[in-house]
Image 1: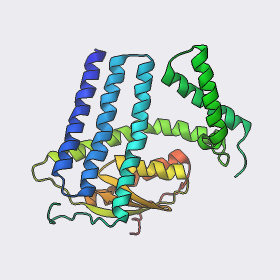
Image 2 (image 1 turned 120 degrees about the vertical axis):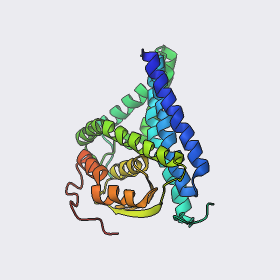
Image 3 (image 1 turned 30 degrees about the vertical axis):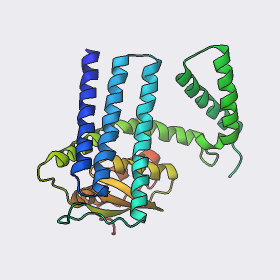
Image 4 (image 1 turned 90 degrees about the vertical axis):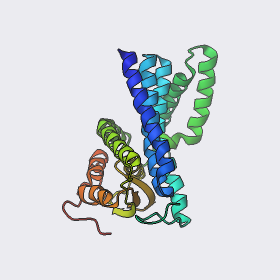
Amino acid sequence: MLNTLALIFIVIGLFFMVVGAIGLIRFPDFYTRVHATGKCDTLGEGMILFGLVLYEGMNLVAVKILLLVIFIFITSPTAVHAILNVAYTRGVEPWKKGDERR
Amino acid sequence: MKRPSVYQYILTFAILMLFWYILSGYLEFFYIGAGIVCCGIVTLISGDLVFRSDVRIARSAHVFIRFILYIPRLLAAILHANLDVAYRVLHPEMPIDPGIVTVDTPFRGDVLRTSFANAVTLTPGTVTVDVIDGRFIVHALVREAGEEDLLKGRSIERDLARVFGEGDQPPSGETGDL
């Protein structure tokens, strides 16, 4: 039962990771690509790790993985913010609808 | 800034020690002793980092508990945001119309600003690009939807203001000046 739940979480997480990768390829410019990877990877990693917590059961390893989930949810948006901030201050122009893909 | 009190040192040390135990997993004398030495040094160097001396601990605890209670709603919003992005990624015509949105908030605390920036990054179609004082420069995947959420709806802003007990009078009805 718990294993099935873990499997569901991991599969959903994988789905979001794949979507993030596809978005990285399909989206037209830097900012929109960061949208895809920043959001989908955070939730995808979080869900995969949470699935592993459920699979592992109640022990110290599960607590460690849970801590990883928490830290990913704090650091991942921060990293996205840092990358975007550099691009923005260096004057990377955002893509507008109708522009050529870069 | 005044010097950190003894309680701050003790609390910081306790948290570090708990973290050490979780990561090591051994309760033997050698490992715990090494942990006490390491955590002691870190506490002495940066005892003011976890609990700042200009913020009262009791108030921080309230904020912390309220924030924990807020997390389920944030997770629901994150899931919704991801489904939205997934839809836009997988849609054959890629219905995106990106643009920059500027959001003015009355937020002053560092933690509050960081939380808001991270929440904006994780929720519907927006990522925070820059923060200048209380002004957040946000890149929205769909410009209109981003403006709808951040300038008209302001649900994240209101929730976080309630969680942190700051900026309690969100500008209701009026749209943020761009």
